[in-house]
Image (cartoon, rainbow, N blue to C red; front, side):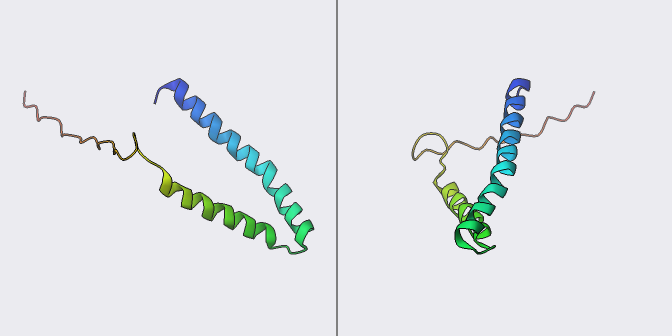
Length: 81
């Protein structure tokens, strides 16, 4: 990746982490207040993780029904100078 692409990707991942750090405790407290059970927030997190893992099976490469070829690395030729 180039420098600008790498910086943008790192900033995006950092933003998602900061957002989760803010939203996580709020959701856990709201779930506990709504249900009266301390584990309800954790069950919500488990459910979101299961949904996210299930959605990964829907990811595709390239066009629909088309797989991108895997690049094959060839060893460098031996140089005997």
